Image (cartoon, rainbow, N blue to C red; front, side, top):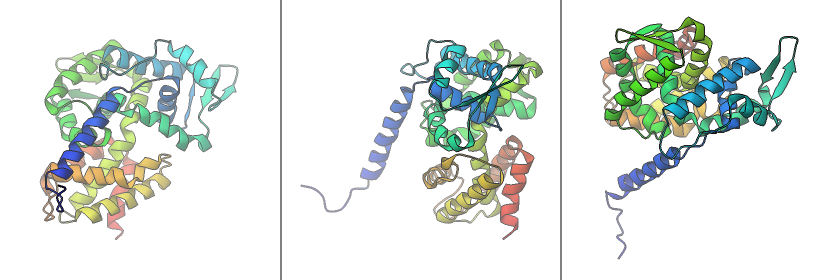
Length: 315
């Protein structure tokens, strides 16, 4: 007989099965011409790159995905970056401006929001190297240990939001593999246990880092609000996070509907509860929260940081 009262085990069990299904779906992620080109063009603040820059960026993504595969079931096209660009251009989603130097490939403003759909299909496959690139770009040089600490601190949120496949204890090995691949590509150099940026490849590294930009901005918003008001309840934290995110998207031209999506912030706040940053009684861990906010504040631009911090001061 069906019980009239829902058993306590039902909701967490259903949630666990749903999360497991999402992880498996993501394991079968498929990179293709369209989602790779959209990822690169949306990473550029002007949504435009020369053909040479776009080719370089796709080469970077393809090498990462081929040499450090996201999962055994994920697929990466066999074609060259140039062939993939030709294929993407045939779909008439991009504009091409020609000058005496060469082609400039542009993602038109009216297409930008729609094209985030393609980018998001493979966001999980590139988020870890993007985060590593963001950290190295900001610090210019960072020890392998400090890099691991940064990623460990942010990983629970990333895992919950993007249904990533790795457990925390697997991260060190994956980071080592990605660091070796980034060194092989000349994006960074490894010296005495430290990762250094290679100025000659800084543009490619910055575009790779931009893949994590909006996620880091969202996390910075919520951690700032929580550190500014440690007794805030979950519902208010979600609502205020979305309000600040909407303001940020208008002031800083963020063309991504998920940037202030309710479900994204709901998931983030739940993860913060699970990780002990906030409890149902409203007792946050203010010191730990501020420590992570300061880490995030270093990874976003100063103008974004000012917008976030002024949002609460104006109240």
